[in-house]
Length: 199
Image (tube, rainbow, N blue to C red):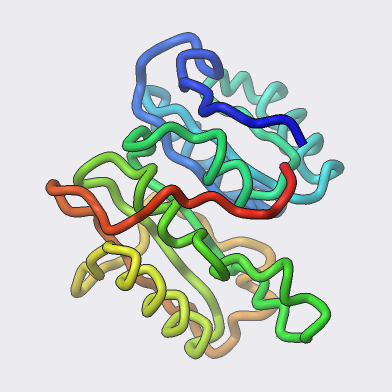
């Protein structure tokens, strides 16, 4: 596999606006709403399913949202290998699939060095938004993110621009669990964040 070098955001967006990344945008409800509400922010989404990524791209074009880019790829690889250190102002991870079966272990989002890669690529003071309908999953993710050097923000509430998604309406009947994390101004404990996953 050829070596991959980090890609500057200036090669993705034609401006120097801050960049927020959503991992697993699904149908794109949050991504498109946030992009419409904040035209001075660039929104980059990483979606595993190519068809879903294409659908969101078409919707963004139809709504003339020039601040949206979507790729179909493994987020673990993209963040670890292609995102520059200290370049993301916020990550959004909403309702990640826990992949509970043993044969799905290779697809679990917070395994290996991925939390360290998230921490390393956030700007100092940058934030990570995490929401799920599964409290044990939230607690597991939180433990790994804190171990990677991110600090949990007490009393956090979801961003006001985040809509209730179709998935949330269908599955989060017992409520949505939300946490926010912040990278300290002094940096993080994150290492190289290199992963074996292919992009």
